[in-house]
Image (cartoon, rainbow, N blue to C red; front, side):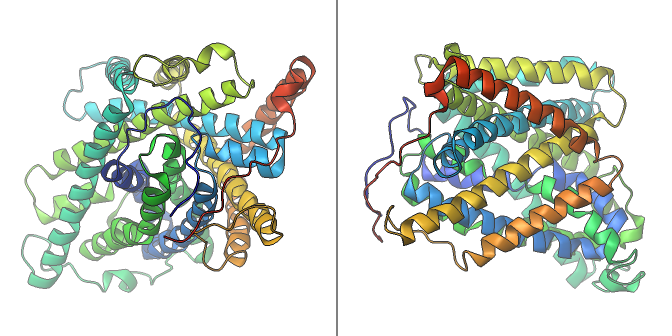
Length: 472
């Protein structure tokens, strides 16, 4: 692709193709799969595979919509910037702060989850100690350089990918060759023999969609890396196009194997189905191995949260929509002040999770899911507006077009609306919808004050006129 280079935001373009690809893979594999799948299997049975496949198709539509916007104008604060341009300054203000909130609360949950996993090996270590230690390590790494962030994320992702591929290969070996303790009972008939594909009905399967969508949170992180990618117009489309393969292998494929090894009714909520399945096979130290993988998944998510919150908060400050002090870059061109503020708030989350009841983790992740749904919906609406603009000749035509748009984008928006309704129907997840009105009032009040004190910060943006992108 050719075209004008993206604007220089002061960052080091230190993320190469290898790191971008692994960041994209890591964004699609997290705690939601390793732990959340246990609760979802208990609710939906084998039909959970359908939920992951359908939701994965929707997420791919969202990412292709994002791909159009990224190849049009790759910038670090991508979601807020597109909302600002296509939906107005208020939408940009809300989207920037909401995406920042999503990763702050996700960081709170994940660093606490990591501390819980440490209890598997060291139950005597206080939870707050290990949580704080992990936070300090990841905070320091993010301050040093974006290359170090990329390397950490690369290796975290490599561990997750290797573990899942290994689990799938071992599972297929058990099913075809019949070795191990599970060899006599493992069978693909488990997918329909124990109560059918929908043992609790279609309604129960629909109710798992909120859990599934949380598992996919973070897949859009490649959009935030645009400002620090060496060649965003080449690496980002490649990362997006491989998403169906990643979802097919790491979610659908892994669950098909797990549910064939052990009948769904033996899995319990709150326990990892991977641990249960591979304990049944008789693999030595299966629990410890999977616990280590889950630990890396949680640390990877917290690492991503530290990275994205720093960039989004600095982008807001550059627009005059956050305190100017957080615009400062350190000598290595990382947004040190913005990362520090976000990390301090994540520390508050460590304290809250230490003192809160057992459902605190569920509440926090529900808030993150709703914030993620808002971000995805904004991406889709901005893409629809962008398509209208380039069809009218006001903006250049993207070289990386979303197939099936605008219908795929409209269907994805309808799906997100359905998930929001399902969240309202779940007693535990519903708390996130209670938080939303307060967050909306806070943002609206902040916007009105900002418009009065600094009108330029919320002025209607002028359409940038980048050169048209041509096909490679």
